[in-house]
Structures are given as structure tokens and as C-alpha cells.
Amino acid sequence: MSTSEERAIRHKKAMQRKKEHIDGRIAEATIDKGLLVVLTGNGKGKSTSAFGMLARSVGHGLRCGVIQFIKGQWECGEQMLFADNPLVEFHVMNTGFTWETQDRDTDIAAAEKTWAQGAAMMKNPDFDVVILDELTYMLTYGYLDKEMVLSALENRPEGQHVVITGRNASKELIELADTVTELGESKHAFYDGVKVQKGIDY
Image 1: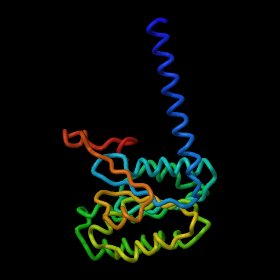
Image 2: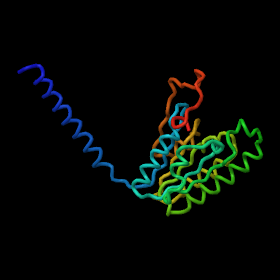
Image 3: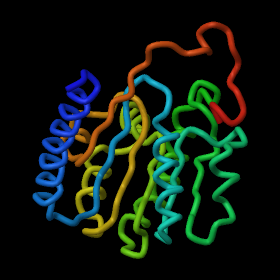
Image 4: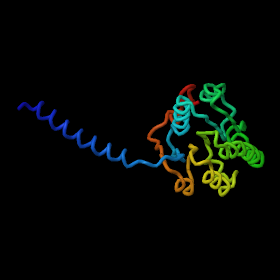
């Protein structure tokens, strides 16, 4: 038997074992529920991942709500893409970045007003998916009451999925979540003096 034939046999046996393992895990996954997904960490791609899930959900005909904290002064490609879609409802804080506003009281008022839209979505079972983009900052800065937010997440409709993005997710959010992904940063063009790029960064 040639080396290539032996390799092919080993490969087939390995893939058979892998298939048995994966099929077993799929068979064991019998729970059907709305997920709380947290995308955090210093790396690029948290909002990008969330909007990828939005695109996937819209493709399946699910009704979606999007709440964007912090962002709002720039033309964001994701908002332009989904703004007119009848399956997507958008609410944006529209104050821009906190280091630009430099007004804590104004930021808190804007955060509370924007949160009210998200809280209403999480009480409405007609929304299949709710994205709370950059919510973690609202908790880190103390703009929103943490217990109020956690309670809304815990008491949302059973089948509703919620996706939260932002750096430094609190331990309470992480403990409550079903899925947590922490994106790491190895390298970023911005730190080499490259300005943010349309379509890649916003």
C-alpha cells in the first residue's frame, strides 16, 4: 500500500470519528430558547459580527430591532443598508462619542432615552432579535442602571435573541449570557496612523 493510500485511510477514519462526535453533540442539543450573546474584547469586529447576525436573521424573515449607543454622528454602512428594511427597526443615540460630547448629563439623558426604545423591544414578543450595540459602555460609564438592564434582559420574551456589543463587558453580563465571544487585538492599522476606512471601519 502506498503512502498516499495509507494517508487517505487514516483521514477517512479520523473524519468518521469526528462525524460521530459532532452528530452526538447535535443530538444532545435539544433546548430551543432565545439566546443572549455578548461580543466583547478590545479587538475589531464586535459590531460587525452583530450586524452579520442581523443580516442572517433578516434573511430568515425574522423581525429585528437595533439600538446603537455612542455611534450616531457618522454615516454607518450597516444603518444605511438596513434603515429601509421593513423587518428592521433602528434607533441611534445620535450624540457621537463620549469624548466628543464631554457632557455627562447630556450623555446620560441620551442613553436613557435610547435605552427606553430597547427596553420596549425586549418587552415585545414580536421582536425576534434585538441588537444592543455598544451597550457595555453605558454600564461602564454608569449612564444606565446595571440592575435595570440585567432585569430587562432576564425578563424578555422566552424566544427572543439579544446581541450585546462593546468592550469590557461586566461580569454580570458575562454570567447571564449564553454565548460570549471575546475578540482580541493583535494589530490595528489605526495605531500606525491609518485613518478609519469606509466599509471596513464604519
